[in-house]
Length: 630
Image (tube, rainbow, N blue to C red; front, side, top):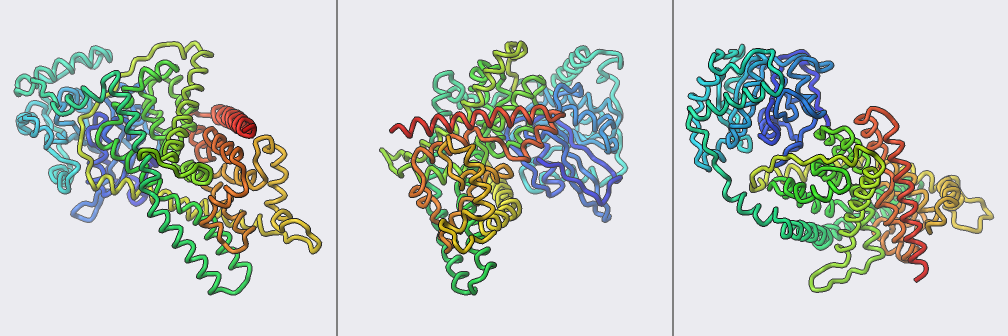
């Protein structure tokens, strides 16, 4: 998640949202500011501060910060340090907040109120918000905000952040500037400032226990439905089977559901290319439109339905609360390779894009685990790899079905599992080679209640993913597609040329030079050029291949017929070797920059590139050589 900056009021009134992870802060932030930040039903979705703007009735505006979730004001991880630095006024380039909105999960007052006491000691005006009030009421929790307010000495309101208008009481308090600090209550004093961290936390815990007892809120109200589901989902034998079945169904759907929309996009691209050829005179700029833009960008855009189907299921699992359970199930496996289940969330985020996955490692307190997670996150199959996978699978894997099971879907699942296995293998090797890797680190992680996904959240998440993909198609991929067409079209072949004209172009010259390196893998010069351009963005490799073969075809037909064209010109061994290469291939430049920023140097990015190149080359070489024997 990229930090949003509001430049209209750089020194305006600042309100910060603070609370435990998974209490609904980001949903409330979106409701207050109209932002569209990512929310998820698990801890760790917010790893850096985000800023928005809340218009006031008088025409002014408040700056609103959404801070990463914290359990206390004693930071143990990078994301908690970000929040505590802002609250203490030590965040570079940011002033201390003028007021705080402390968000508490109304279904878990015992944990949330301990943070309220710590926040109160900061001496800033503070509003306590009991979020998820509807869920608390549904479980039979009868909370009196007025009585709680009197006990805390702070204003208390309720909210439902997932409903329009659920922030009305918060807006009303924010609009009443200047805010009251609230009168401290002597009996809630946790003790003198000299108390150490452990003593302070224990004292706050005792205060909260007494407060809840006096308000008749000290009885635990279990989430019966979640407990019943977890008996199966978290079972040591049944749970992994359910997890594997879920993954299996997801990757079957990626191919089965995408056929119709992909065919529609292909037919539209075909029709547009044919119309351009008929409407425009034979000129270089027509070739650029047909062989460059339509072939290159159309060859990538056709995979948008599969990406959206995959992310639909990921969002569904996030919203429901199943993903933390998957982390719990995988903790034993990850512990065997020197990691804890806490690395699961950053690795899961890397299936969308490695950049937010690497940023999500801020939630990992142990530095060694954090660096290792950053090192293996690029091996998780990001969405940019999906177009490459589906193109090669469509070209070289028969579309066969056995008892309703699609062979292509099984191969796609196998590729994802191979990336995971590669990452676990690297982590295991680092565990064996480092003393710190052999130390046991038990997983401590909150398991949220199961929620029904909301259509608004699903639609918003899919739109964001589609916009990110289309923006890449319209920027990076567009520019590199034009560059690829220029390289493939110029200089023109000499009059006495015997081979295809494209072999005399800059692309042909570069490709033939690189082919010396990639020939042992069975890669031709076209693949070599595509791999080079794919360093900027994975999808560019598809656009580069489509552009090269469209130039060869000279009619733009490669924009929609790339898969059968590759199947006719490449061997099965070459196609499978390229798939093996992309399981481990070095990440795009933006990922390497993210690793540099989060690790604080260029050593880790350099190690990442070198070990991924070695793995990719070895995997492709073995795949090509073995299949060539058949």
